Length: 423
Ligand SMILES: Cc1ncc(COP(=O)(O)O)c(C=O)c1O
Image (tube, rainbow, N blue to C red; front, top):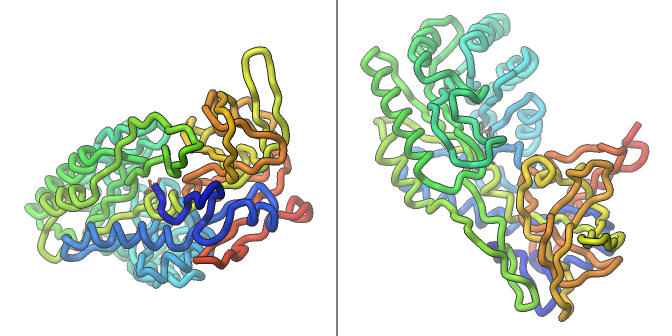
């Protein structure tokens, strides 16, 4: 639940800015973010993990990579977790120091690797033996030494949606834990490689501590095994994946209460679990949260184009589509949807759908909402992570603008596309 995005009387506000004014001024669909909500989430993490002696919070850019959001997060003291040369470029442009940036990804191109090496970022996270050899070659060609973490696949079930589960051995990610020792030995011998430590990322939107505990335990055993073989680990990166709540993000007496059933991770418990398992002398711990920092800070505002009644459904057709936010189309993700201006209206069960020519183009199926009409503005809540960053121009639709609000002051941080942008 966000305290920076809430109703004042019957109007939804993002910090000091009424959502309906923003929709009127900048048009819809429109992403709006609260800067203070991002700050609060980052500070919450920082506080919880301060029990670890050497800890770094690396923001996973893939969750939201708008440069102004990145500048805000870098100003809070975060490092950056990137997955492409493009993300490294954006991180550097946004003020993240090179030595706070890591590069992950199961399929890095030579160009990605060269970019990382020449920009002198902190570490490259290697996911296979072959990739390790390529990094060594590229580093030699460029006259550099690559600091490397090995991403291990601990074969842990993150108990999240299968499409965002990454730590099982059938997933494409990481080096199988059974093979990892040989790869670590190779890494510590190869020229132009400095083996620095271990990485693991078991999935996203994880809502229990247990999967992290299992991954941490697996890493602990592996680090001890390496130690026996004379290989020292200086950094352990436990990846991202801390889940958020998507239901009842905002409450009001005129809104239905959403049946909950959601859990979230207790951060102090998570920090304790990590501390207990991974406190090795002079070893730094990193985490790479994306969603946790930005999800709650964002809403997608969309205007109702039409109501359409069929024999057994009422469709609310809105002007945002799956190209603007595809989380529901991709993995049936749940987002609370609310009218930005509440009237004392009866509740009805509707499907909220977009204009795109795909049946999966929907934001909610059979959802209880206060009765709405053409022209009303809806807010799709908790849209700050994997919203705009997954958007596209599918159906040659123009990508929406993004606005960042700080106190009473909204500013456009990305213009909506123009037709010329389509060419
Ligand atoms: C390697 C890696 N790190 C961090 C993240 C961020 O995950 P989240 O946004 O769930 O925290 C991801 C997301 O897929 C990832 O693949």
